[in-house]
Every structure is written in structure tokens, then in C-alpha cells.
Length: 280
Image (cartoon, rainbow, N blue to C red; front, side, top):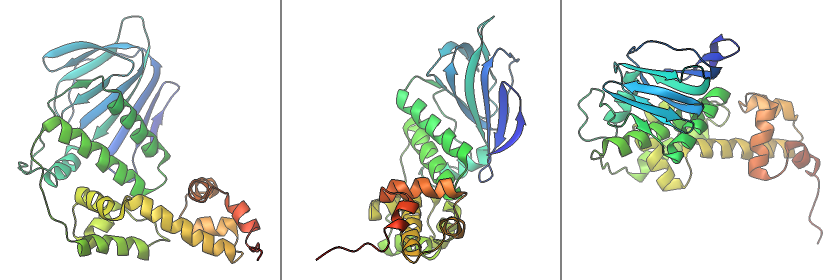
């Protein structure tokens, strides 16, 4: 994500790939009045205790809490008097979520369906949100960022809205178009939007049907293909730095980390053993 404001306690970051903006504050005692905004927002409390007001409800939230705020809902979240707290809040343009809802729910009417729940103590939701935030901050791959966001928010409102889902039968050849597009673009940093456009699938059903048919997500397959190509180039003696650049990795450490996670060896170790042979 791109930093748009930062000081010792508060940071604002904006996604390069999605209409998302992140605010995170550490050990802050700043307070503000009730307000509303057009974006949907979801956030977590990392430490401290706060009074949370959302429309007509008021409750105390603390470390491990997740808050969910619909667009235009009047709300406030302020630390207890004389105390500090730390939190993360993600703002998402409602049009993005509306389009995602429309691709999944049979009852969708081209307008945002408000979330019913405004607060959760679910540890899984808290953990999954923190994982999404780390992916957004690292900003390494548009494919990973988009796939992770779609997966997180799809699961969130499928559970919250409890509405009937579309049960589309996806022909295998349609999913194969996505598979082929990824295979043909190993050197590029492609996105879910591009793959969906080429295959004719919605963002949600692209991820869902691809994983069902091939056992891994589009991002995981794309990364696997990058590493397989890197192995071929390393065996030819190509320079490690050049390989990382040519395959679209953000830097050499990014390449190193993903190579080791799949091959269980570093690129340098793999290259050093390229001439080794199995003795008869």
C-alpha cells in the first residue's frame, strides 16, 4: 500500500490495486465525534479498551474485537478516558463490495446489502483480518492482494447475510481458460480482474471453481509456475537477480522467500547443485 500520511502514532495507507484505504493507530488517545462516511469499514482492536457506538447500539470493545460499520452508519470509537489504544481500520468503497455481492447472492438487487452484525469477538475473523492487512501492506502481488480480499469479504458476508448463493455450473473448459491464461503469463504480474475477463467468470466464481478443479488458487498456481520457470533458468546458469526481475518479483528477497517455500532450498543452493548427478 502507498503511504498517504504517517506520524508517530497514526498511519494512512492506500492500496495500489483496490479501492481500499487503511488507517492504523498505535497507543493513541485521540477522540472524535460521531460521524458517518460513504465507505464500508471494518476494523480490529489490537490493544486497549474503547467505547463503540454504531447507530443505536453502544458497547465496550477491547483487544480481539472486530467492528463492522456499514456505509453512512453514524458511529464513533473512542478509548476510555485517560487511556491509549491501538487499532486498524480498513475502508472499502461500497461499489466494490456491491459488485462482489452481486456475483454471489441470488437476492442481490444492484445495491449494497448492509451487514447485520456490527461487532464480533470471533478469533478466526480477527486472525483472518490481520492476515489480509499484512498482505495489503506488503503489496507484493496484485493477484494475491485481489484474491485475498475477495476471499475474505466473500466469506464475511456469506456468513453474515445468510442469503441464498448462486449455484452456477461452471464448465471445466471455462475454468481451463483461466488456467491457460495464467500459464501464458508467468512472467507478468496479472490480476484476478484480468483472468476473470479472459475466462468470462466472475471474480468469486473464478477463485472458487479454479480451486475446486485444480486444488489450488489462481495465485498459488501462478506462483508455482514462476518458481518452476525459475528452476529451469537456474539450471541453465542464469543470474539470480535477473531471474527475479524477469519473473516479476518485487525484489530478490521476495523471490528468495517464495522459491524456498516451494523448493525447500534457496535459489543459490539450487543453482550450486545444477551440475550434480545421481550416481549409478
